Length: 389
Ligand SMILES: [Zn+2]
Image (cartoon, rainbow, N blue to C red; front, side, top):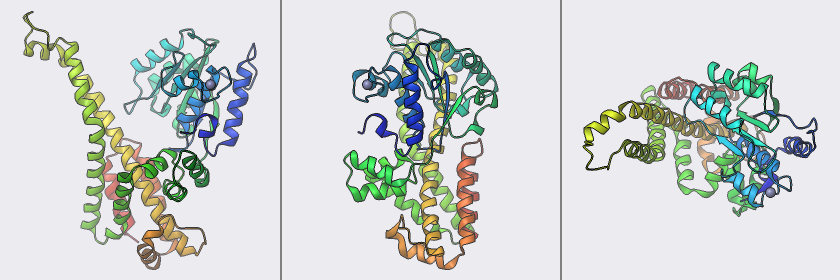
């Protein structure tokens, strides 16, 4: 895989900003290009986590982020003692989690000059956990750097936003993503297809390039627009979309769930013998902890389902984007050339205005999926809207 700054594709300006910060961080006292709190924003798949990890690695590396030394590799593999990467598994970051982060941030670095705290999905901070973190960000120790990641500045509490330097990532151009895949050994035509189909989502592009199942699932999704011929058909299509997302998410979360459950019961003494410990007694003792674990697992599942639905929506965007290309007679290449007959038909049967309206409806659904709304209802509303013509 491509290492170092080159893996942050299409973000020349942001890379320059971070590199300046890294070299100012070495001065004593640090220069003004370095600061203690950063808010890294950008659309899903643009590389927020990658940017945070590269910055963290460069702050720890003797060579300002070579991407190859053992220190850099430790950061990339989440095993560097002075880099903490918090990836919230639930829809909100809890007070306990925030407290844990603040405690960790106060510890002096083990090796270098910086303790780097990466908080992915900082938009999941609520009023209470956000305000707790705010205090730590406002009065950082001289060795702590906070890197908060979120989709946009509006998603973050205004008090936190105002204390951070904002690093804005953009949607990377597909050609840059394709070059990255090629550098990782993907065949050029596959790299071009996957990058355009992923609409600037780097992780999605990589999955499409490397995983045939992902490509097959995408083909299924692209048949959906042609199925939306009646109201019952819209509901059926919505049910299929949600059911597939649920199954797919379960295949990821089920093994995690049962491992965690077993581990918890073991921690409460299951398997211990000869001390009058019965299974019923263990279950009674562990009851509260099990309930807490199950709540945590439920929100992780919810999140996994939403992530999968988001990919479906990206695929649908490429379909209607192609329809629009045909309708306005633009000479850019189609993403889904192999579907030309279907695309031609939809293009002939509708207007550019209705296609724009459909694209808006999909984008709106993507946004709403990040809220607490029911995915089933959102997807049903979308398929009905797409069928409206
Ligand atoms: Zn290095």
